[in-house]
Image (cartoon, rainbow, N blue to C red; front, top):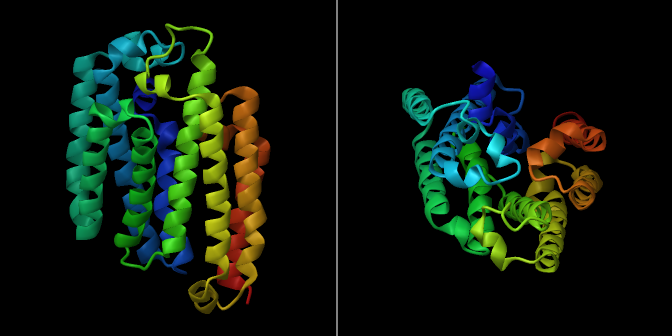
Length: 291
């Protein structure tokens, strides 16, 4: 049963909530326990909230999920977990979240509320509207970064916000590309109406623009006057190749294998894992140890 609940809560998708740690790392507070514990709490809260969103969406979409080649295996669609139990689990999780929120900040609480509201509109309306669907997804990632800054009351560079926006838009459109490829040979397999408005060529154009946006915005962040002044070095520019490789590697894997979930790629591809680890090590060394 525990395995089924983990599947229902999409625990493997919690990796997306690591975006809340971005402000912590780039604010030079990574090794300060007070700051780190607050962000860890924020990560846990966002993970629980996202699990509730996934659960409620699965309950609402159970009939259409049963027609999907992959989603039909989800706990509710497959019958492994009943709707009533799913509702009870969602309510219990919300209670835990409410109990934890007083230990955060007012700004963080507001951001979590906005995250829930945006997901509500996405589930009810925006997910069936071309472009608004991927922009809604991007907003969710940006809220994670903003929440990570608000919970520890630190400044977050506008360049990092823009980088987050472009990378989340990139992940969103690449997900749509995978869904189109997955269902193009079976007209009954697609349960996402918005796919009717997309073509592979259009998505590839958007993906290329956002990929460029990620790399350019991140590069500009590393050489901005404020970044150099705060970190006391211009060496952060040398981490840009890791960002570029990660973007290109992700595109390669999606084009090659039609992977649908970003988290699956990030935790299963050896080159991607090594690249992320090298990037994190480089950033930490440059920001905290090398002058």
